[in-house]
Length: 605
Image 1 (cartoon, rainbow, N blue to C red):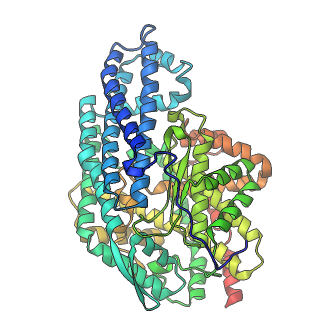
Image 2 (image 1 turned 135 degrees about the vertical axis):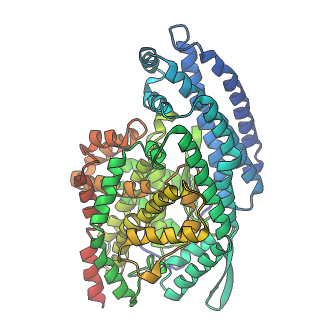
């Protein structure tokens, strides 16, 4: 891969082809008005289903379910588009209001679902199965069966409907408040004799700077910014958890992991087995961390050293060259996936420009019936940015493969959502390694791979442990800011073992990580590690099978919305996720480059 010092700015995305005019778009307003009218009609028409399913009402049931499915897709478009607007410009107050409007529509849609759940439970198995066998319903029978089964462990429909109403003005509002607060935080950053005002998103890029003083300042500035909001963040976190726990208690859900596991369509035993294997193998990361300390010439490995670059840290990867590199190397695995990536890039589905007032982080979101995705990130010409781009394009391809499926059959869980994205990262990194003879670049690339393994095995594990402990303690009452800090350190000590120095923990991590505040999914953590490990197993198989694997890969992705995680894995990989063998192989794949990293560091020392 060639690089240049002269780079043109990374591009902005095209949102106008979806709704021209952003938050002031007349077409967007028209779409929202139509959704509102259709919701009102659906709320009236659901009464027609009260008689139950028989030969005379079968068509009415089918038509209603299909319209309800379509409404869900159109409400998701409202929320996805508003999310894009608020992410690209944190000062877009109108988009914030539209996002709240969309949440009201989603709540009403969910209330219809609560009624459907109740009605589904009233049907005999014979009549229900007859309904599921209808030609227009067969493709989404997994989703509908899942809905019916979960309803057995929920509150009466009146109470579920009330909870959904309260979510709009309480529960989801906490999420929005946190995002607004986070997006508006600014710091004054000093570098090269200049002081620059930065958002936390811009500041995050400094955490991977080659200069330790820069990283340390970035960390301290971030901590300082959150210290000014820590009490508010604690209030938000406690309130969100309190809401969840109250609902769980009414439903009889004793464990706080019940809901996230149901959302991930997986068993607790599979998750526990994964974490056990990771914990048993944590010591295998020690040589990597020791070698990194040696290379960085430091004796204490602290939080702000985790993302310190190794090897050729100054090398630039301009956006245009990065996209071409991704395309060319994805093509060797899957021409179809490569063609998709090129289309997404050429059609400006990617928001990559580095500018103020953008939120931090990156994401990929669908655009409803448009059968398109949009990718959000801030591209600053680093290899880490290149990997993020490949990661998000993997997400987009996953959605693309499912485009010919009904919306409910496209609805895959988050743990499987990370499969295609992490797989794309692995393809690109190994391609880069194969094409370089430069020791410094090779060191940097291997560091990227091992840093990913380290993050998934330690960082994400600490988030999971924090969530578990926090929800247990929250049952007994509100936790103070100090208690949250203490709990975060306990979680980090267990997850990181002796990899981080005692002085290197981040007590305010619970405050600064938006994943803890996302109301769309509780325990927004373990799916990342699951996807990382899962895709590692897939990638190992792809290397063994060669070109023929891409068809099998697409087939697996197509089924991700139509079966449980365990069923999917058994069908396409012949693997039992509750057994340690698969996870041990995944860890071996993740840590395969530790010895090479140590060797390269020794050669350079």
